[in-house]
Image 1 (spheres, rainbow, N blue to C red):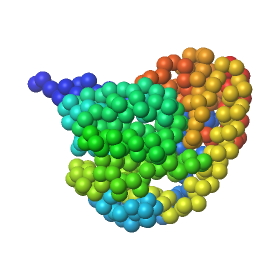
Image 2 (image 1 turned 90 degrees about the vertical axis):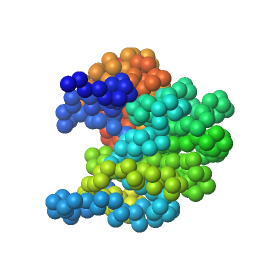
Image 3 (image 1 turned 90 degrees about the horizontal axis):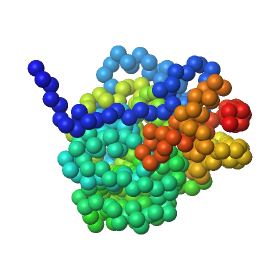
Image 4 (image 1 turned 60 degrees about the vertical axis):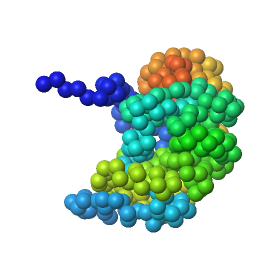
Length: 358
C-alpha cells in the first residue's frame, strides 16, 4: 500500500528550536532558552507537589477551572479566552481553523518560525517582509497586508527583542480590518518588558480581527509543563474551542498556571532583574571586539558576531556556555547568536567566556 498524505504534509519541515540540539551536561549554563531569570515561582512548585496525586485522574476537559483566574488576570471576559498545550499548539490550531489552501499570509522576518511552518502546513501562501526594526518600516509593511488573509506579528519580536508601540500595532490592525484580514499578535514576551506596557490584550474588545497569544512558558519559566492562552473576539474563541483536542492541558499544568496567576509580585521581581541584567549584558558585550548587541526591550539579546555563529556556539560550549545559534531564522545568516538574561552570576560567566573566545 502506498501512503499518500496531503502535499503540504510531505513538504512540512519541523522547526528546530533553541540550542539544545547540542548535548549539554548539568554544569553547562543554558543561555539559549529565554525564560524568566528567576525560574518557576515557589508557589507553583508547592502547588504541583500538592496536586501530584491528581495525575491518576483525567484533567478538566475544557480547562474551565483556570478561566476565572485567567479572566481576572487579563481583565477580559471568559468568553474571550482559551488555553492550550503551550503557545505552539494554539498557533497550529489557529492556522487549522482560519487558514485555508492559498490563504495569503504576511510575516515580518526574522521571527519565530512556527507561524510560517503552521501556515504552510495548511496550504497557505506565505510572503515575507524583511526588517530588523518593523517600527521603522511600518508603512511598507502595511502596504503589503493581504486581502482576506492573515498577518503574524511577534511583540516584542523573537529573536530581535524589538518592541512595536501599541499605536503602530493599532494602525496595522485597522488597515487589516479594512481588508478583512486577521492579525495574530504573539505577546509571549510582553510581560518581560520592564520599561513600558505596549500590550494590546484589551484591544480585542474593539477589534474583531485581532488575536493575541500569551504563554506561561516565558514569563513564569514553565516551559516544561506546556500551557499557554489566547484572547480574541468570542466568535473566534468559539471556533477554536470546537477543534481543541480533549484533555490537551494536563492537570498539573492547570494547577501550576492557576498558582502563577495569583502570584502577581513574581512578574515585578522578574522585571527588576531583567532591567538590571539587560543593561549589564548589553554594555559589556558591546565592549568586546566583533560583537554588537541589537537594542532589546525584553529578556534576551540578539548579538551580531564577526565569527561564524555555529563556530562561536561550539567554542562557548567548551566554557560550559550554551547560546542560541540563529542561522536557522529566516532573514538571518550565520553571524547572529541570541542570549537570554539570567542571574548576574551567570551573566558574568557569559561575558568572560565571550571575551576568552573571541
